[in-house]
Image (cartoon, rainbow, N blue to C red; front, side, top):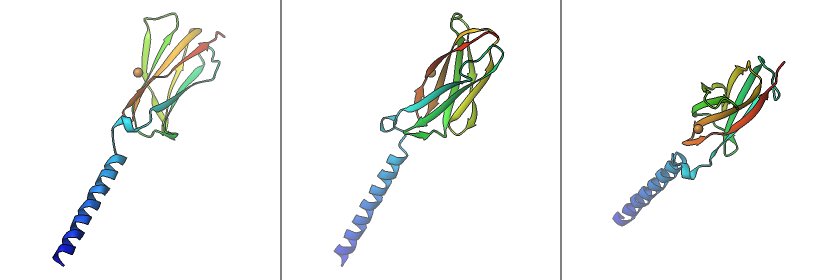
Length: 135
Ligand SMILES: [Cu+2]
């Protein structure tokens, strides 16, 4: 009788340990266990003109799902022939996993945007080039 109850207690402890370790895995902050974040960068409209409102939009997903918690997202924007002048703008949250920067470009030319994105312990920085055409 004494032996049996001791065995039960032991089994209970083992179960408890197993439960704890599995829930720890679920919450693991170790990026090695997680898939890299995916950042889709879009420029709207596709062929903007000078002084037209341009929306730069980043959609952040991980393992096919939108990332709700984005630690930091900053868009770096610069004109192709002006290597010295890079502006950095914090993107605004539009909806879960979607961040935007709205901007007008007074000068026609080729521009670059890089979305510096930190989420789920990862950093991704996709780049997109777009043209601003004169009116
Ligand atoms: Cu970056």
